[in-house]
Image (cartoon, rainbow over all chains, first blue to last red; front, side, top):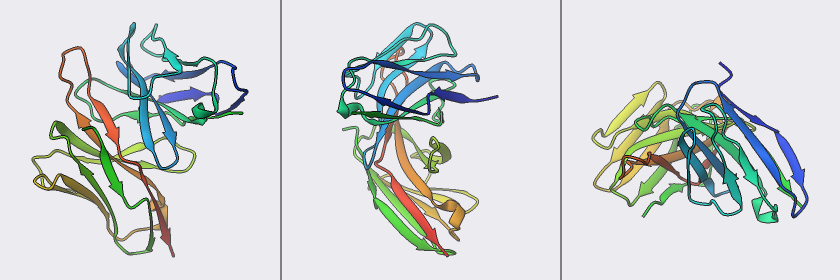
Length: 113
Length: 117
């Protein structure tokens, strides 16, 4: 199994541009998450999904959108990129609501200039 | 209150020494306390976890100590090795209050551990 995969690994965006961060998992997990990691701030939850077609906001959803059309994929959309969105983005998945273990992808480092 | 406070921010330990990272929480609704290890350029990975009805859990050189009354828990790494150099995150899981929801992890701010020869 590849686990959780993310593309791209790195990206530089200009202010106002848009992009989609891709995330896929091949473990048949129902739950998927998007986090951002900023230095000294830990991991903050952006959006999560409990299954195909069901998503909800996390702690820091402003400026982002998600969709979940399949169990495997959970893309994160950035509209009108701002410098405050410069961060490392991690996608994660877990089996079900009783699982405390989340499996993380390798991350996408995004710089907005 | 969802916050999990972690200290220190960075830690340097000599090879063979004991590394200790501390976390504190306020929300008594947290029901599980995992620790994640993150190497540079990688995503976090689960290291060890403990339930609040247990005071200590040990897996190899890694031990979690849990003090429910003080709302504190800590990670101890015995005989620390250079390969343990990584960033460590404590976390706490809150059981969802609705059937629709799911558990979310609240992460501490991380501790960058460096083991020197």
